[in-house]
Image 1 (cartoon, helix red, strand yellow):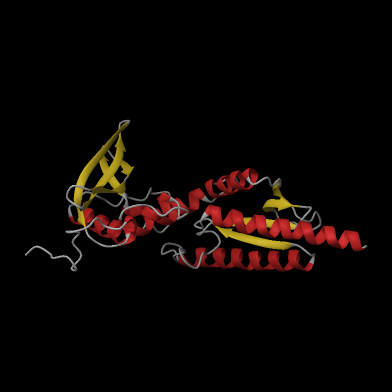
Image 2 (cartoon, rainbow, N blue to C red):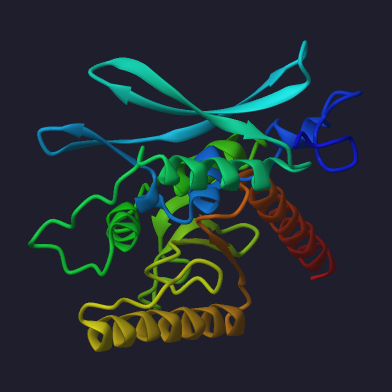
Length: 263
């Protein structure tokens, strides 16, 4: 039986833009797709010969029929491939993406990649997070640096806020006494995205708890020395993070200027 208007089908009107368009200033596309799919490792298409491609869901509005259709898209041999998945009728993009990912799984269009035998991770999602946040100059760091530079802020990269304290911040604003740390969700135990490891569980539990304790100690030491500490999770909206950093940096500079004038 076809659905009637009021049961979710767009019959006499166009669906709202929030049902299919990405929100301006929203999370990065890869994070949005990961959340809807249920994890980064649930977005794989098998290409054959042991090869895999990371797919995404595209939502398209067909105005003539007032319908939203979902397509699975991936890259193969330098070309973009796509497969029609289903029509979606929810009033939010997140719900429509989630339904499309589930339908793609039901259609056997997606697979779970096997873990490399040498990996110590408990899943491909954990492995991807570990690899993405191993060193400096990660994508979230580079994005934040670019946004701050565009706002006219200058900073030191991968530097110690205090020479006598052996702790390195990702961005340091000496004049404002602001230290910024861009924390990876896996290595720093993000409360929203961190999932305890299954393989070598005790080792990874101690490792992550140690990182958390070290982060807290760093915050306390820098705060005691008069520094403002800002921690940005890798999943945070970079524009909002840049706004927060800029606000604290400018406030710190103003406060030091006033203090110097009084002295």
